[in-house]
Image (cartoon, rainbow, N blue to C red; front, side, top):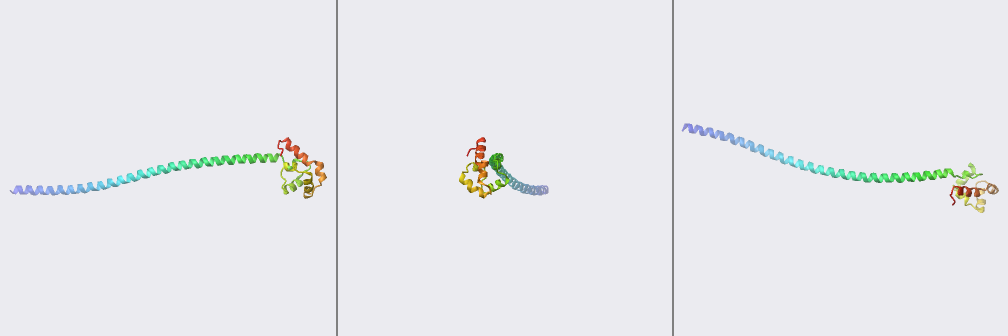
Length: 164
């Protein structure tokens, strides 16, 4: 009996140790389950953030492409306008009031001050306008008529196919 009691005590001791280990393993298992759930949540959050980032990148690329295309189009428009202005400026440089014999720097300044800026405007003047204009630019009408400013302007325009 003594032996059986000793064996029972030993078995109970082993059972208590096993129960302690089981509790420890159960606690460890529960902790691991909690960590696994947290890791799964983190993975879902990261996947969601990754999808959101990919969508934002795609939207940015689309917006960037659209704005780049719009900017390129605007640059092309501005370059075309600049080319047109440059061509017009070069045309203006080629045909100025000073191309009319008798119009020097002083008369040119006076005419420009009165708003007469093109050879076409000179070509369009009639005798009455010349008489009104002459005293304003401190010129004599007979000199303007003798130098034939209107006729010269018309010939210049005709030679350049710019007849008004």
